[in-house]
Amino acid sequence: MKIFKGSRVAAVGALAGSAVLVLSGPAFAHVSVSAEGTAAKGGYATVNFKVPNERDNASTTKLEVSFPTDHPLASAQPEALDGWKIQVTKSKLDKPLELHGEKIDEAVSKITWTATGKGIQPGYFQKFPLSIGQLPENTDELVFKAVQTYSNKDVVRWIEVQQKGQEEPENPAPVLALSAASEDGHHGSSTADSDSDSDADTASDAKAASSTTTAAEPADTSDTTARVLGVVGIVVGAAGVAYGVMAGRRRGDA
Image 1 (cartoon, rainbow, N blue to C red):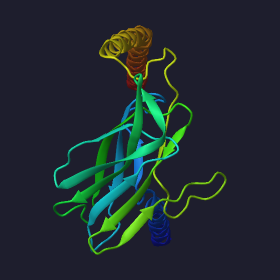
Image 2: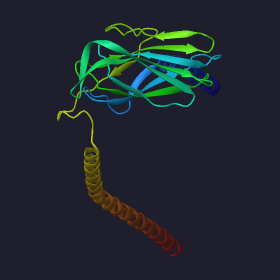
Image 3: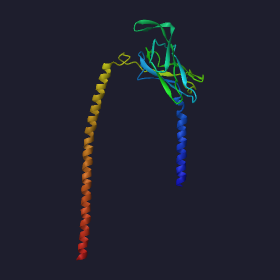
């Protein structure tokens, strides 16, 4: 019976493990984009395009990211990466943008990373950082389209746009979610604001720690009192038992 239970537990565990692997696998397979911190509307943000290698016998040697044309970005500065050549392509705008009081008639349309070495090898992923802005204020997300090329000439196009109410497409395009702009109209946090927030957090933590200590003291005192009373009870009980035994022996001798 014990062997049956052990076998059943092992089987259930193996099945659960397989389910986790099957369910979690696809989640890591997409080319995705995310912000470091927040990407507030009307501001600037640093984002990372995360590119996993899905091949067992080939490396990712090229990544092309096309920028949204419905919400063009005037600025996109890639971070230098060892082992990669970076090309930024700009295109003329049909409708110029206004940035810091100036008219901008072109925007970034595509950035291409080409490996100069081994690229992204099997079993690894790579992040491609960008500083982008000024982010639009009239949308909640930006949709990028990415094309991933492997050393064996395979090409995967991450260009399918997610439709509301439908299942995720097989090759979804990377989507950057935008947060609301700050209420004071600032699109980024200053050093002074950060220091102020840090001081406030420190004071709050100190107050919380003080409250926790104060609240804990009565509990500690009560616990100590209970322990002392418990020990005293044990001693008194033992003394009573000893007295009873001795009294019994005296009666027997008499």
